Image (tube, rainbow, N blue to C red):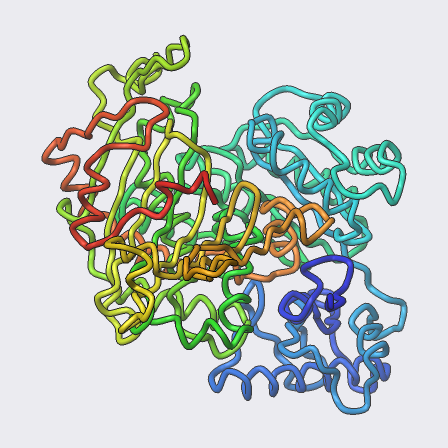
Length: 604
């Protein structure tokens, strides 16, 4: 039986709590004694929200963006903050749900104060913007998830008109969702809300010109602004400085989405964070890791915390090892110049795979609030010891001929130095030093130009003590163990490998899968990760974004290893394009009495 939720996925509990706000008057407007009853209701609502927030968190109340406090000492006081954040979805006593929602949209004069969202994609002419961000925004519009009033601006150095931007964007838009409305009509409506402004990334004057254009579209509404930095990290700070000083919202929120990489090591990451915080508060910075927006990663905590059968097993007592595997069946494909500066450890392991591991291993959070979840993830990262070279195997793919086709090696790429030691493959063994996971190896593996494309989590359980049927499995007892597989991509699925009797008069055992195959179970197509994350950023939901202390802890694990590899000039083990990776990865697993679960994955 399906449980019904609102049409827009992120309109359920945590997101609604994050975006509900009580009304506040415009900045600088005086509060006079005897103002209309709407203002009295606002004051009552504000006190209610503050008391709920304090009782829920047991600590001081944190103000919302831009972290200025509202003074309410009496008549003539001027509010200097944005709307107060509602910390609980329940309306105050005496308010109906509908009446409370209406109050949030109304000013003290009862006229109503509408808001608008301006989304600026910085680096609009780049591949990420064209292939992911604009299509995700259109999908949200098609689904009815964007606010009533919104505009999308592209900002880049390239000279382009509004019409040229719309032509460029239209080439990547698809109506992959069910055809409830005419696709071409919805595209036209969306494209009419897309505009372009050309400018330099380090020019306050050009961002001031952008600000003027944004204000023309925002009119007298409360203006909320979201900047998506789809640009190289070396110009993050230039853009943040200019946008903050010349194109921030004057009466609403301003938020910035920052794409990885967040530095190359602990020192550069900390420097980037310090630079960002010169112009932004932490709650304005949304560090995006698109893997956290993938459906199966989102389902990880649901699977564990809402099913009684799993949570008691989620510990060292029953789990033998956990494998987090990422593989691509193609090489750098022209991205060699970028990739060579970072390598597979920085590009995949330190962020995507480590984030999945933290979500998998964290303790039960006290609630679904963003800070409670992120607190538990940070505890996991701080419980791990930094990686050393002995814990890791690195590799680099070489050219290989298969089926009469010659596939080039990594250093055959013209954008890569011929003597490059940058790894395109890495396998690592990590351990969490806490009571739940002590001694359980977490094996990570990530690589390019491998035999298959997949991302999955494999949980291998311990052998059954005193197994009555061990004789039916011969000497390979690993075949008798249960394994839970969460396939993140492609062909999303969750399946549990169990042992069962083959029908017949004899006692022959077989290994079968209890399989939740998403394509077979659900007719609706799974949203792209960027859709979920963009919607969360608009709504102020931070659960799937990375906090600065979380980032520091993650880099603290990998920085010693990265420095050791680079200072000692450790050469990667070569492996053929299209193979299963370097042999050393199998020796690493065997060191901890583990067999990689994806060796026969094609059969499952």
